[in-house]
Image (cartoon, rainbow, N blue to C red; front, top):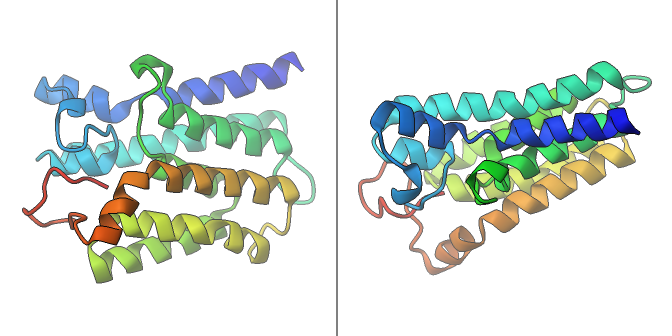
Length: 210
């Protein structure tokens, strides 16, 4: 039990590393929380004028969650190709850490990149399918928030039909993560319904972030 608690604590702390905040603070001497939406995620970092830092934030936020799951899988590899409950729980803990980081007063990002890292580590086919949906929606609408929401909705469905196979722990964990991501987009959902959500790459509505 001590090992499991330690692994979950490590996963949460890894997820809590606010790379977007740190990169902007180090390289631009600014607080990303005072820019745009105030979100520490890759989209807000990129829209602040630091596209390179936005890409770096995306990669680092993805890999910190992936690393958290890989640590758990090392100690609890699972059975018959299915991930262990501990590995799934570590993924959930990492996303919670990103959304509610202890270092920033529990006010973090929306969990999209970190969720991708978890999905890649636990179910790569599910991750790639959801990523394909995300890219398709962004390409056709330029609405990152809408793409994130739709991709999140599809994740539990893909988890039921794609490898590694049906797992109650996996579906439950993915459903929780997807729901958390959607709930963190509540302000975006309101703007989408009003037709006022800013589009990626547009100079208009730069203060509206996904």
